[in-house]
Picture (cartoon, one colour):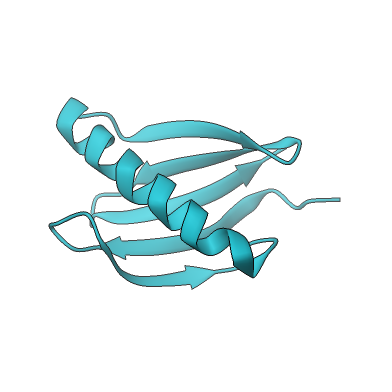
Length: 78
């Protein structure tokens, strides 16, 4: 079963591109896909002054949020 908790972090450049990422995702082939989603989501969150969005992925929710230091955090919630 999937564990709940933080599954990755990505540090954004001001352009929205990923400067550095870390963490474990289920499938390395998904990383570009997730990176694209995170980058797009981060821009949306930034524009709307939101800080969190939830995506459903493989029977669990992945919460993407930006913490106070502008690090994007991916957290899995069952």
